[in-house]
Amino acid sequence: MKDINIESILKLIQEKAILYVPKLLLGGLILWVGMKLINRLVSFLEKILLKAGFDDTIRPFLVSMLNFVFKGALLLVVASILGVDLSSLVALLAAVGFAIGMALQGSLGNFASGILILTLKPYKSGDWIQVEDKFGKVDEIGIFSTIITSPGNKTLIIPNSKITDGVVTNYSKKGVVRLEINVTMPYAESFPRVKSIIEKAILSVPNILNEPATEIGIENFDSHNVEITVRPYVNPEFFWQVTFDTHEAIKKEFSDNKIQVAYSEGIELGSIGS
Image 1: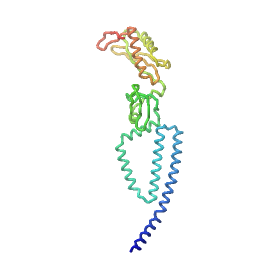
Image 2: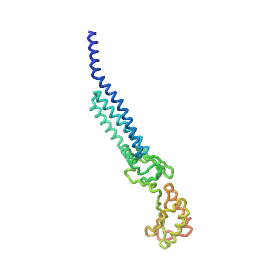
Image 3: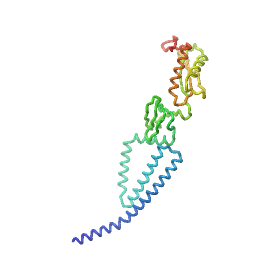
C-alpha cells in the first residue's frame, strides 16, 4: 500500500513537473528579459522627456508611472503564461481602482491639474502670480498643489484644480507689472496742476521704472470728484511696496500743495492732512 502511494505521488509530481516546469522556465525567462527591456525603455523615455524640456518635478513622476505600468503589464503576462486566471484578478483591480478613484476624486482633480500646469507651464518657479485674490511668488509647483509666498512672507498652498479652473495672472510673463492707483481731485482744481504734482510724487518713489513711462489720466467723473488713474510700472517683486509708497507720496504732495477733496457727506471741500 505504501509502495502504491509513493508511486502515485511520484507519478503526480512527474506529471505536474512536465506540465509546469516548462511554463515556469518560460515565465522566468520572459520576466528576466522583460525587466531588462523595460529598464532600457524607461531610461530611453526619460532621456526623451529631458530633451523635450519636461519639468524636473513631473519628469521623475512620469518615468516612475511608466515603469510601474510596464512592469505591471509584464507580471500579468507572466501570470497568464503560468495559467493564472486573470479575469477575476482584473475585475478585482477594476473594483479597487474605482473605489480609490471615488475616494480621491478631489485629489485626482488636483493631480490632473498639476500635470497640465507642469506640461503647459503657464508659470514657473520664481514667477509672481495672482490666483483670485492670492498674490505671491511661486516657490514650488507640485503634482497636487502650488506653493507661493506672499509679499507679507506668508506661505500659501493653492490646490492645482483652483488654478486651472480660474484666472491666473502671471506678472512675470512680460517682466514688468503695471500698477493701478486711483486718486481723486475736486472739479474746481486744475488737472494739469494736479498731474504735475502726481508726477513729482512719482519721482520720489523708489523702484518705479522709467520705461515704460508712468501713465496719468482722468478715468471718470463722479458726483463729488474727478477720478484720476495713475499707472506706474515696476518689477513684480516690488508690486506691493511701490503701491504703498506711491499712495504715501501722492498724499504728501497733495497735502503740501493744498489739494482739497470732496467728502461724500456733501459738497463741502475739506483739506487733506499730512
